[in-house]
Amino acid sequence: MRPLRTTAALLATTLLCACQTSMSNERNFGPYPGAPNIDRRYTGTVADWPLFFIKHDFSTQCFDTQYCRVKYGSVPAEDRKPTGSIESVGRHYPAILSQAKRIGIQNFAGPVVIDWNSKDGTALHAEIDFDELFKDRLVPIPPAVKREDIRERSNISEPTIVVEVVDRTVNVYTTTFIPMKEEQIPGNRYSNFNNDLVRVFTRTY
Image: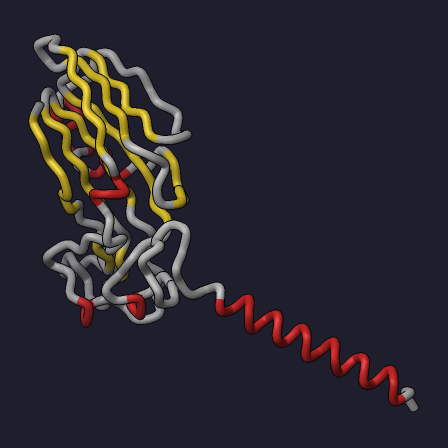
């Protein structure tokens, strides 16, 4: 028979572990470093509605420029010169925009700094503050997507933030993989999701 003192010690240890686990679970609730104003639990499913994000992916594309450099935090910048037109990409546009260069970035890695020469050679500079642009930390939802049409308990990806430079214009889009209950292309059983681009910023310089 186990001594009473040993049994009491084991019970105390068990209670302590349970308490620590409970405290650990509480840390699954906000505020989060990447979403400081969110005070509800993040599940990565439609249960989070309105959807918010605590991480994001990042992608860049340049078109119709003589030179283009986009720098964002520790994401390696690429010096591109020159860049082709959107038409030269053909059927791969706009899918090419969502090809993330870096994934799982904690919100946010500082301003996006863009230095480029437009199609006519004009030197241009822009800075975009994602912290301000996405200050509510809510996932931009395509107009076609309704809460009741999203599959329950299915994982919704963190959004990819896309910076696109076209000649003198800078666009910022988001795209998010959202599992849907129904096929988005009737008859195509592989189309039960939405990842449409949502433009959240545009400016011509």
